[in-house]
Length: 266
Length: 320
Ligand SMILES: Cc1cc2nc3c(=O)[nH]c(=O)nc-3n(C[C@H](O)[C@H](O)[C@H](O)COP(=O)(O)OP(=O)(O)OC[C@H]3O[C@@H](n4cnc5c(N)ncnc54)[C@H](O)[C@@H]3O)c2cc1C
Figure 1: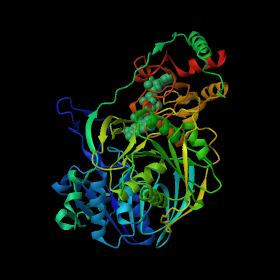
Figure 2 (figure 1 turned 120 degrees about the vertical axis):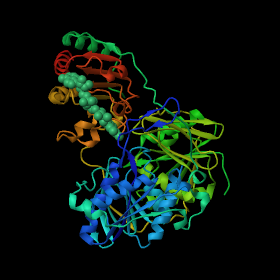
Figure 3 (figure 1 turned 180 degrees about the vertical axis):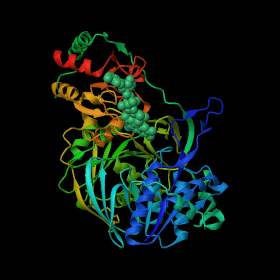
Figure 4 (figure 1 turned 180 degrees about the horizontal axis):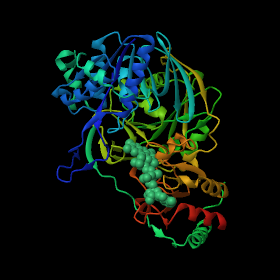
């Protein structure tokens, strides 16, 4: 199977604040790591390859420093890596990003399976998998928990559709997105890190793919972020009960009865 | 394609019922805009969920009766929805619940229609026909206000249980039944199992009372269970506790778990991280127990006990 894994480099911590001066998200001193769900996607791809054979190509769109994460993917076992990097791609929303990823996957050609994490921990959209799948015209299974190859062109997948348990048999070509339960990530070993520098890591720009420049970056993005804000925590009264447990319990029991909070509805 | 002055809402189904998030969306969309609300319902010939939906007073329900669409995969449903737009025109907005299904189908449809979509919104409002969407990012640490000025439909998925659903009694909803919709079935996907797991009687999202345990309360599980039994409450947990054998993911409250809206929530040994409190804002009354007088959870609580959860539970179990 020829498998492409979409990886996003995200800030190591999501505990970021807004810079009061620039009104932008302050990412100073926060280093980039592979989005955690994408680690599950990568491991799922490696596990499938190890059963049915084939190649795993790690792909990411972003600035040049995203190469660090692709290098890491190679050291984790991916066979090749492609970085999609171009000024023209900058400022892209999900639709414009999906377009570039889909065009790059078309350029690779003959891809049986595309796997991505269920969502990135910074943007939290979860849209990339379905958008790319639609643009490639392939089937999709999102939020996959367990994935098993059934044959050379079929996977058996377990997932939860909210609280509904589903089992699916899906034929390739296919897009999968993985939860944190799929493909438990393994640690990098030193030999692999050494070998990884022998593996191909190529960069493609907009000139390497037949893309429509109107669909790239900001001009290809229907959504506009008007404002970013810090969430306003809605504070409550925070009335302190007695510090004596028995007294506090009596006070609370009184309140619960008074406010009718223990009555059954309907 | 023609534009129509309507806001569309996708009716999400669970097994044998409409997801309550759909009703919440109807009430919300009616309250923020004069634009007529249309609900899109895909159901089998034998079903008539439109009767339940109309109690919430949408202007119109488009009911596609098709046994094959009843439990269909994402690709087939997205195809059917785009077929409806071909048939009726492009609405001003198209809103989905940010459930697993909504978050899978909506972006698929977005890419078909080449429009914008904002995921997991916490609030919506209108400026004339412009839908203003408020979406969290960075694990709820940042809020973004997003608009889609030049494309239609303006699409969004909205987190369930943020808004309250309200029934209306005017019975003016127009029901349009469609029996001849063209859509493409995805032959590559075969759903072989589609069941509710045995353990779903305790549903956090709809519980009236919840006892929530955090890392500071986990050793008091027995006392907490006793309290939960006494007041007929469901037990929920913070994320760290889902790693324990006693609990599972479905019991997690918060940004990456369930958003809850009980009448009463009692937090035991929960510190009050933003990711946890993102899930409890709609609780009516919040009581929190914590040994740390400065625990952030106290600021999000109506009543606070500064002390150990063990002492508090034992005392409360005695008086109730
Ligand atoms: C992207 C992301 C998503 C997340 N999503 C979620 C989510 O959905 N839900 C969630 O819960 N977390 C989530 N988290 C984790 C979150 O950041 C916190 O780590 C977590 O909520 C803390 O859980 P806690 O309050 O149980 O533990 P702690 O923060 O360790 O708090 C324990 C509290 O118990 C008190 N305590 C100790 N002993 C006692 C005692 N004997 N009696 C009473 N009180 C006592 C302590 O004073 C303390 O306040 C997420 C994190 C990230 C990064």
